[in-house]
Length: 619
Image (cartoon, rainbow, N blue to C red):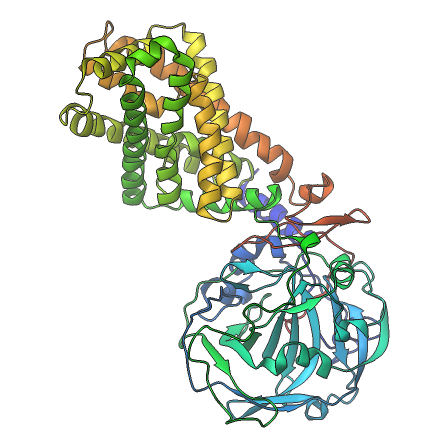
């Protein structure tokens, strides 16, 4: 199939799966922009699961790819300080009448304003500018993370200027607590995300919402953008520092009416730093008083998340595979110099782990005779340090890339040329790194300086070569199957400790089982040959290198890469079809409902729900 045909098919699939744009001005009859009641809702060509690639789908979305003030961004407790950008005036009446509905991803509310005279709406002021409430909607999970913590949901109060152009968003993070929240207690019964034609008029006291976060007494603020195409910039975000806690039942109702709607976090390239601000909203104390440190009255707040709804601290399988896709695309784009240097050090790190293994096992000859299984277990436990260094330093290892590049190539996110280029360059320079380490840091450094260690190195080399060809082939399969699973587990983890554990266990297993790793053998066999083995280079290549490499390809590319592609990559909606939930999700009526933290810096498959709508106004 030609490239143009493939692109057309991909665009069509994306359009079918695409999500409606957000709009907080609701038309009761058609749920479309009330500015033009005759307009038909348009089809979108984007979706949350492709947010990393929005800018390439449509030239009108170029800001999504090359903008410098994109949202959301990660928040830290000790970010910046300024005496500017303060919220100075609130004009929110006790009762606000509007329409309660579902915007296709979660609960939403729009202020009734038939004449579209925005200055009549509730308002607040900042930087000598007044903005007016248009409505609110909920994202699940939260768009913004604070110290890498992602709340279950995030409520956005969207404000416009006098001309009706979106200008500011008040963002409130939501989590389950131990008691009901009075604002959510007054909401009508939740409307499902597949009931977008349903609405209910409601009169709500939004002061209760603001009181729940002390009228934004402390907040982070930055100049950002819409979080959906065309990613228009110039939107001021105010993120309340305190979390609004609901009851467990209220949170379940919110999430039961929601589906995934969080964009991946964006690079923080901005004209001015994010600031943490504090002020007194009821005329008590000087206006514009600033918080000078990260200590807050909200620390130790008794409104803690309910223990029965603990956070899931790992990516789900579909999210993990989405991260693998991004990794494969990045590997395909590596410049030649970067690929070569990274591959060289990939070989160095694997050799380091292998040398550690030889020193531990070779230095205990008595224990090898009395309890060989224990020595094997202990020596195998030292070996994974090389793989940990490879993953955490983000260098290139051909065996792990066999799984990742096969997965993205089957997805048609990368080409066969990208796969071959990556594998060949990595293989050659992994070998170069291993041989360099063998000669300089093992042989010339005389690290194996005892007869027991050097003889053990010779024994290990001979056991890898003087063996049936097919044994090495099948052992290569088992090895790289476990290596691929180690990469998968590391990718699914959100912190380095979890990544290390995820890497360590499968690698420990393959070494203890005696499986063969082609790159590790580039160190283990040559170092044994330096000390004198009973075979030459030719036998090493034919009897070990070729079968182990082929086995590694089968284990990594087929048993891991193709396996994951079949489950989660061959169809953009396959995660929902297989019933596999996103992280912390629960299934409701056959659809996926986000119920916990989403991927950090990425997005995942979203369920489609009826006719798509297009609008640029919601963030």
